[in-house]
Length: 128
Image 1 (cartoon, one colour):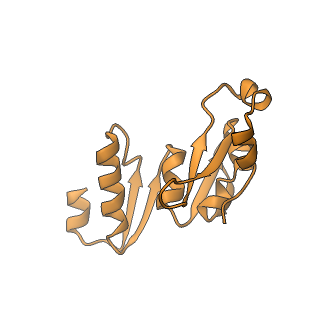
Image 2: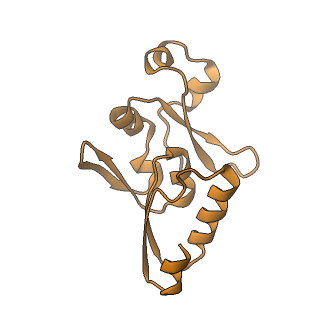
């Protein structure tokens, strides 16, 4: 990273920059990159990180682009289910009320049938 930044790029390409980092190092890296004032293209597989840090998101499935939109649209709960076979929710952060993308950790077959009223309230909603 230091070598790339020493060249004062206008575009930075990152392939899984948070791979194998602990949570603090992940946040430090993403915060640092977001303050560079340059265009950053990053591949992230941790979907929960994406809405907090990305302005524009491309979702790929089997090598094809299925969405290119702001994070809350590209990673809408229906699209997450369509592409990854997982149920996802946007829940409000307790302090900031910013939407947080949360993956349902139960097996997909169980997730459909065992909803609580709490999760039913948030399912299939796209944050504003």
